[in-house]
Image (cartoon, rainbow, N blue to C red):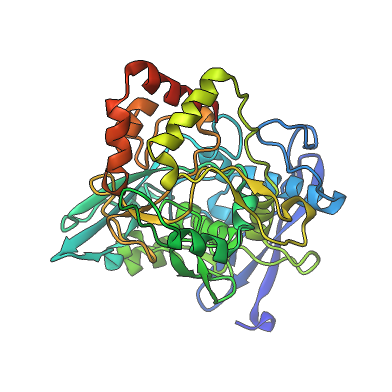
Length: 415
């Protein structure tokens, strides 16, 4: 609809964190939808600085980059409402509500539900029924989603931590692809997930999400905004219909899409700000190494854990000094692996139903439970729960004396 056909209504003027903000909604006469009321949100509390604490920004950021991190943190903490575009179906109202433990940017015990149907070895995400992701909340009870009766696969996935995400993004596609070509023991294979980056239209190596379904943080943010909060953007301009029901969508979706608009003054929308926050978020501090931790690391390497959980990768050349040719001690190869019984049965993007991305282990001391669905309350159970390509390393761990098993678990708890 051309702007000349729209009528702007000043709805209210109110104080937001001590700042007066004029909130404007645009009415689109043909479909009677109102433009989402979105405002600038500021981080409360002290301005973040790189002090080596969990949740701090990367060191060596410029003042402009530090300001972008702080602005992005404010957006990450922002609580969405139906007036700002929330829903009609969603999983939570804020990025920080899920990425909260032990501090904003981390993981949590929160899970999301995915479903689908496996028929003669072919996975159907049941897109016509709102799959494969189920949104657990709605702005009206009549729009609440459920798992369809014909779904044969139902899986839970934990929220993943975001510490060091910018460093992971800065690893070159080639380096990840090269990891798949190196000779590995125990029949371990691993392959890169090749996905289309929605922000550029190019094929990239995926690295974010349990299935490595996104390659860039901007795409990761845009995907989360539309699927977890129901906020549409320039990359995902279409709302999720409750269980695929277009009539329910028409009834309860009252805001015009896309809801997250680019600010002409800054050239950024809220998904860009959230991506800035994640990009400049520092990784967990390295472990304090003592003799027991060193012995545990030696065992980790000896029994074959590092065939997939590669200790260190490196970023490529980058215009951001803080991301330029840096070590990334993430303990992952970022590849997809056949995990046998330790899969979630969901095919997504380039990943098959039996494949999962190697989960980074840095920051492991800050999160529990473990594995993709939180089935393991302890690291011991997480290790013994491995399967597929990880089965040989798991079996070697099971055969270790209990004292050495403890050393290896202590090492993991130090990360």
